Length: 520
Ligand code: ME8
Figure 1: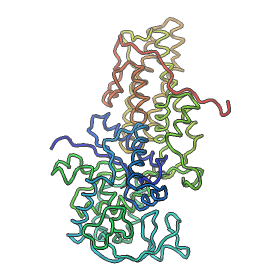
Figure 2: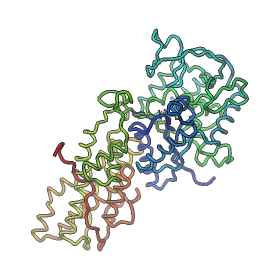
Figure 3: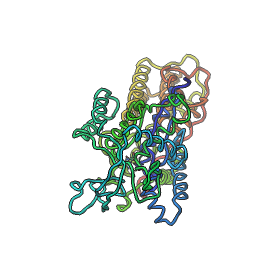
Figure 4: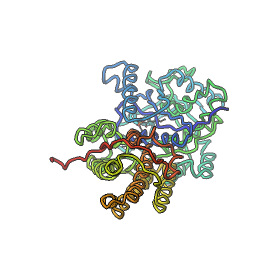
């Protein structure tokens, strides 16, 4: 077998609405994980895409008076372009309307039906078209509204195919209990075990009355396959499982599948692994479910008018501060990761974003880079003299922080990783205050001034490496100002004092202009 890839996925997003800060969160976290792995020299296969076969997608296309295929083509383009604009470096953008995906889904359906894991029955119950889910009479109350989203339900009574999920309750429970990293963070693992406590019920995996979707193979009633059964298989389609013999094992199984908490217990941590068990395929290594962004303590929704779009947020920051757009986009990525909801939900607000921008980016990071390079130019004409090295205490702190950042990034804990990285900036600010390199230079103690500024410069070089998963364009710009050929690989962070005597620096250029006070 050739290269073994680190396989990382986001969910595929429904195309009935535009990308927002919720879908951007999952995608940016995935991108940061992918970039971190690449910086460590690993081969990465990063998959994202769009979920296009849902009846609600068809419904919205009809409301807009567009042929559904045209609508999904246009929306897939909106998603792909948004992710590219957010500096997302995915390897494959999959769409569930692709022929190769339809082929995989039909084949899986056939195999599971042939082995008795899919059987024919009848479903009578209340159906939520928005959640694509059936609910038992006991769950819907007198109002007949969806227990999940609150929208009105419709009564359905139809022949239906079922996936024998109940059969996999015990094997799955055992798997979860014996693989502590299978579901992260731990709250999600507990939620999943709670969800399974009374045993999993067989799920209806076909739908009648819609022509949009992947047809159930050889079905006399013209049913289509349930959109979740279809959508989950995208992760397998992307490996060319049916086409490449054993070569798909270079990619399969996924190392890290990221998603929000809402689609973990019911779908990714139960139906999905059960489908893979039924197919005899290895299960993903880790399913990670983050929390949600809430706005003013409420769920984002079109009707409340509190849905934020990532590019608009970044553009506003760029206009208000004068920060170049690529760096404003990186600032947005930084905010998503620094404040990322992990275990619980987190509040998103423009004020919170602006505070982080002014504090962490303009005052801390931007200022460190700018004042360090300025002093090198002012006192040393931007050229490193002979004999400089980093003070011992500082070098030890750098090494400790780099290790802590790596540990947090590996655990998908970006808030923690970035906090640890910012400790380096805080340490240099203290170091400059204590050592006052400007006074040393004024007093003519150039040897010591160079020594102190060399510590600061190393911090800048390390920061360029440590922020790269979160802010790739800013990292490149810092590397350019340092006159490095590119952002340092992760290995280069273990070597403290890598910039040699004689190395010259580019003139400093501000990256994050401060936002003025409101109205000022
Ligand atoms: O669920 N905060 O697609 P989707 C954080 N097509 N995350 C949020 C969020 C918020 N306010 N709102 C949504 C689907 N998300 C299916 C997936 S995969 C085989 C099929 C996250 O377009 C949500 O948790 O509804 C999930 O990870 C993704 O956005 C869902 O997007």
